[in-house]
Image 1 (cartoon, rainbow, N blue to C red):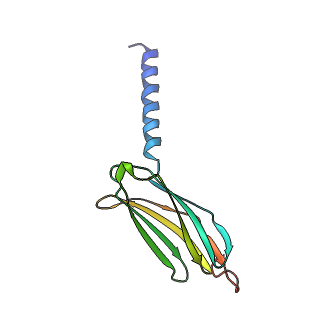
Image 2 (cartoon, rainbow, N blue to C red):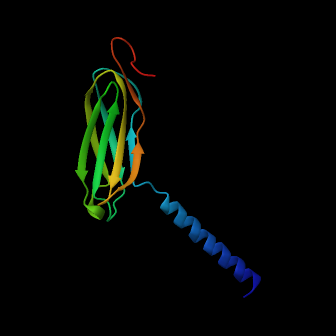
Image 3 (cartoon, rainbow, N blue to C red):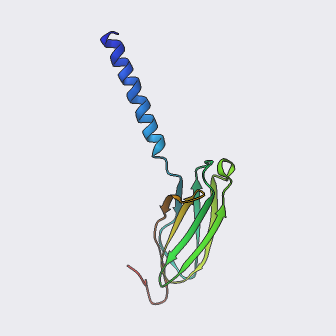
Length: 130
């Protein structure tokens, strides 16, 4: 094997390795939402992207806020046939800071988690969080 052939083979192996590492880094779930500030009461529009995969069985969406605000919704996924994009509203948020957390599970464990931006909802007394 000539030096040129070895260099070509090495370059090809490197490209394949790089491509596989990029594919492995693709998140299973992502959260897109507008962060920043809003006045109370407010509705928050959130878009979730879930990569279809045979192992994906459950999507858990949690809205975590203060003071003591917590909401959770569970959605069954159909593996590779599951919808890729889901949209939902979190309605009538009172003053405080909020974040959406989305988790994808298989039959036994959590596979991936994604956190959205923080939304600060301002009430008549001003912001309640930093």
